[in-house]
Image 1: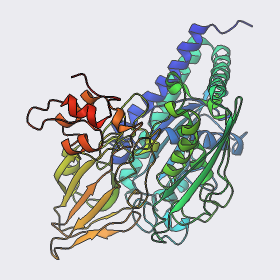
Image 2: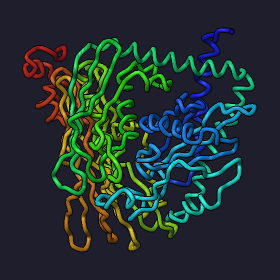
Image 3: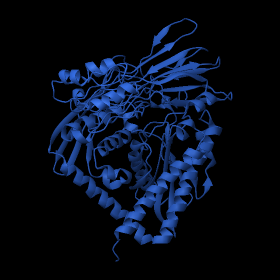
Image 4: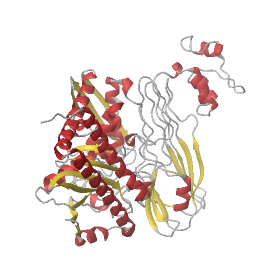
Length: 587
């Protein structure tokens, strides 16, 4: 048998990644759903006939890991009953490895010369999934059935023919079924694109070469991740993180606790000690494991980032106790889990690894400060969407400042912000203010990215409501690495025009029905810093002051750099005095 040469392996590896990326681009260009196309809350990928992940698009990293459970479920559940032209659909967190109900998964088998060779995979946050309120992001639901329609792994089409009674049953339970049907068609179009491209690879390189190359890709990645683990110092490291609350029990933080055990090339994450499952924020297994993976992968050699596959996921182990907030059981509600406690899972893992390899771990990113809304849009149609324009800054990393206004941690910047023109033309908002917040970042030798101050004016008398359903960080803090500082917390409130009230908004509350003229104000935190702020390069502090990232007062009091407010020149003598001559400028 001819050995797979390195060039062929590299070409095929990148070809599969390119296919997954092109599937994502098709969704961006064709989906009418603002969440899928503009905010990019979706994932696409290619899987082998056993459901092993081969390649994923660089979209939401946590959704990539969830897909392998669902592809493996289809391969097992429908073994002997999978045909060319079949299309599968699912979303249930408890029977179909869903994350939360709004994330629907679509899978299509790929056959070549009569043999099942791949699965194409597409997953996205849908406009609606039924439930008590549009969108699925609302606290206080009685059980998961109140959050929406739970779809097990079933066929949407068989042998290229639609299954009308299945499609009718699902769409009849959706509020915006005509628009959502178009998005579903776009999802399946991305799967067909994958099929066409994979068949081209098979025809060009041959089935045997492609199959053996896939096996080798997985093996190589497994060895690479194991080698990265082996570089980490042996030990047991602990980390914990809390969400503000669960939306039902105010002021009771929800804790995620993790221990990471490293011995040679073995890495084991144990979430024993995490809080019991609770309403709304509890995470099912298929949401927890991928977030552990996504957090862990950020600490590895960046050259691996494009190519994580089944081998990567098999290189570490996770234990999450059943019935806990990190492995909930039916019928516990899970609506907010991708963010809360998804973020807390992410943070607790990195707080562990930050003790082992602090120079490879980013400080905490700003907690989520988004909202979900529903009502009547500019075209007079009922709608649901989410808005992420209030996202805060990313955390710093050893040697690098954080990025401003990047988004929540577990998305790693993949969730986009809608542009103001699109928001104002489609929805009943006028953006009154949209500024970076000076002094909002956590300080450090490398500082975090800035948060933003945004004000939303509701300019309609028609129905318009929002929830703070997946927001966090108003009552709890993020973390910092190696002496860095954490930023101030998120803030948000509603200015009521008629009553002239200022209504403070906690997270995971609502819906709040607005009146014309009401203003929603959000001030997001920045990311946390890394290292001692008094060791920051004075020239960088000067740049921060000149560009209104940092105030002159903070430059002096925190960074110990004295700057003239008129000329922006550094007073080197005074700076040296404040810093004790340790780290300063050259006079």
